[in-house]
Image (cartoon, rainbow, N blue to C red):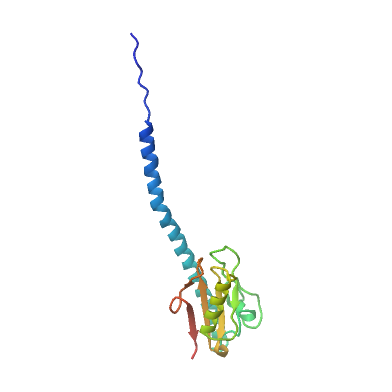
Length: 171
């Protein structure tokens, strides 16, 4: 008499149940992962804003309380890796844009007010020319104050007053 040999394995229904369960778990985990990445990039942008704040304050300390007239020249010496001297030396490293991964840009808003830098930034975002994640710097009030602003990957402001701008003044 022949013995029937039973083959062990998974049925099609069991495999389908496992695939469905894995799909449900992936659907739950993926949005949380994407949200965590956005939060990390926003935190990096705030860190870049803080770096520019420290450089501006260091410059002002060496210049008797006057902030840099623009975001070029001697101001750049106060960024990390620079010579930290207002008269000569090498420029420091501009913080990297965490959204694009490109070298960062400090856009000088020119003389103006906090409202001016916000208007410049809003116009740039509306025109589609502002690089997401870039940090902008603006000298205001003839060397008495400055403003720093940064945007996330969606072009929304991060940090600062009302989530828009970080402003310091020596007045």
